[in-house]
Each structure stands twice: as structure tokens, then as C-alpha cells.
Image 1 (cartoon, rainbow, N blue to C red):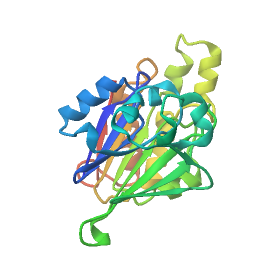
Image 2: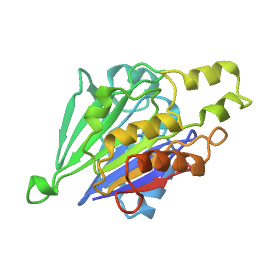
Image 3: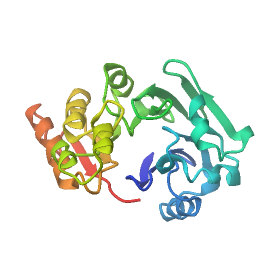
Image 4: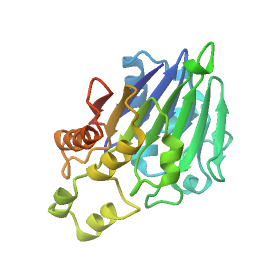
Length: 257
């Protein structure tokens, strides 16, 4: 199994999770041609994508979904989010409804969990990839993008993961001191905005067990955060729990679309 973060940030987001010959995408927020190019660069054939799961319909998460039409890939999203997406052929659309719905695929199980963002109905995803021989070989990947807060239900869905892909969007002080309009600052700091470094650090201290989990900090703001600050904040919080990088967990900050 491998994870490739093909794009991360306000210009576009796309995550590829591969097990064997099969890949699923979380979001498709860059141009179709860029997705194809980056898939091939990491050794993934676009026609081997089994499904695409969309966190929400904002363009930095959905604008490349014409790739689904080209390769006839089913796309899962909250029913209301199709009002924003609208570029996927009807027969490829799959609706996610209800409390923590479960989608079963060939070799994986995907739990959608509610997140908090300024859209109709946003989701994060916890994906279990089945091992070849026993449950001991199963791997769990959680992807949490674009949410203003992390609640207990979200933590419950993500707990026990081997890999966490989670946004560390901004530093609060940098956000407040930025040149952004006051309305944008207020939205980003709200419960329907984006996670700040301290919120991410707190969530990870409640999730990491010291089993060598891999953490990817993503969706880093270009003007209201720095990769070094996001990494330092998370490492400092985990150090207080007695966890050291390289021994108890592995951390990487991903930038760029």
C-alpha cells in the first residue's frame, strides 16, 4: 500500500491511495491533465482508479473531476454537494447520506464522517485497506481536509489509523495579522473554516498511539502559515505526550498544487 499526495493547498487537493493494482482518489482539485500527469509520475495508471471520494464541492477539491467522465470512474460525494460539483456524468454519481455511511469496494472499506466547513455537507474519510491474509495486515488511512473544528465523532472515526492526512491550514496570529478581508479572516477562524496549527496538534495528541504512525500535514496556507511552524507545533505537542519523531511516529509537511 502507498499514499501519494498529488496536490495540497488552496490551489488544489488530490490524494491517491493505492493497494495492489487498485487506486482510489480523495478529491480531484487540480486540472484533469495534471492529475493524469502526476499519477503517471508516481507509477499509477489513471484507468486503474476504482473510485473517487469528494470531501466537498469547492473547486480546489473538485475541478478535475472530468477525469471521472474520461475513465468512467464512480464518484462519491454528499448529495447536496453535487449542486457545487455538477461536472460528473449522472451515471457516475454516487450519493453519501446518513450518519457515518460505509462504502464497500474491492479490497477496501470507506467510512465517511461529517466535517465542518462553509459548504452544504462536507466529509472526511477513514479508509481500511484489507490485507492479503488476515486482519492483522489491514491498514487504515484517515483523510481530514477543510474543517473548522475536530469533534469527538471525527476522532472516533479516525482513531486507530496507520496514516493520518490532516490539514494544518493556518497560524491564528498570522491569520489575524494578514491583509485578508475581515470577513475572510472571520470565516477561516470559525467552526466552519479551516484548522489552525494548535487544533491539529491537539487532535493528533488524542489520536497518535506511538505505533509508528505516519502523519501528513496538508492544505498549508501560503500566507498565513509556514511548513516549519506547522511541523514545530505538532512535534511540540506530541513531545509533551512522550512521543518522539522517527521513533513513535513519522511526520511530513506537504505543500504545493
